[in-house]
Amino acid sequence: MIVKDLANTDILNLTKRRLVALIPVGSIEQHGPHLPVSTDSDIVSYIARQVSEKNGFLLLPTLQYGVSFEHHPFFNLSVSSPTLEKILIELCISLSKNHVDRVIILNGHHGNLDALKKLPAKVAKKIGIKQRIFVYSYWHFMKKEFDHAGFVETSIMLAISDKVMMNKAEKGLIPDSLSKKELSQLSKKANKSFISVTKNGVWGDPTRATQKDGEVILKEIISNLVKESQTCLTGIGRKFHQ
Image (cartoon, rainbow, N blue to C red; front, side):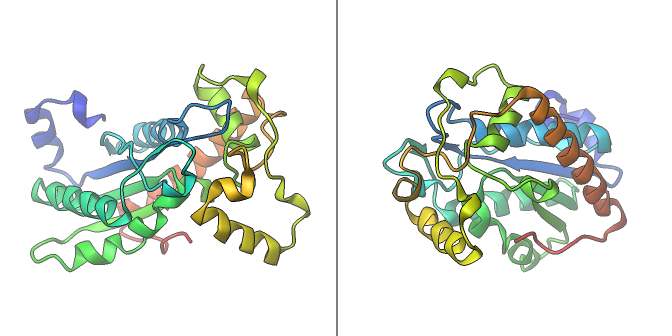
């Protein structure tokens, strides 16, 4: 159920029963020379729609802007963590006032994590608001290691978009040979300045990505998220994914 396509009376009828709202959160930022800057928002929007359709959730419009300052001087359109947090808190309160007491926030960009991790607790402190909020990042629902404009993201985009320019795809930082300590140090550095670590804005190797691989990865993510988000119906949820 896509909220922007519904009339007021439709939504009022829906909210008479226990309804779950799903808010996708993405970003607008560079994804190497071969993927559109909307990649994070495109992927999380697709996954959120599939999960919503399978579970009968109320799908809200994707928040397109995230916290992506680390990609400067590569292109990014960013908001601060406090701003993103405030927007989401106010959306949750608005949903509560419209009798929606269960909300899933599905994250599509690593840089948004700080804005999201304390959100359920902060909403819980609001007077008169009784709401269960579940925060998930979609990459925690697949076995493959996540990347940035590498094999995983490029494969997924090949499965859902015609905007991938594979003729421009090039390898970036390949972390396979790094120790856990080296990888941790490099990740912390990338969180402050992505270009200082990757040079071309790519973490991983997109050159071997395929549409078929993307379809397999998406199927795994969506299946696992559908099962996990069913916990909203029972009122039992896992802790926030780190």
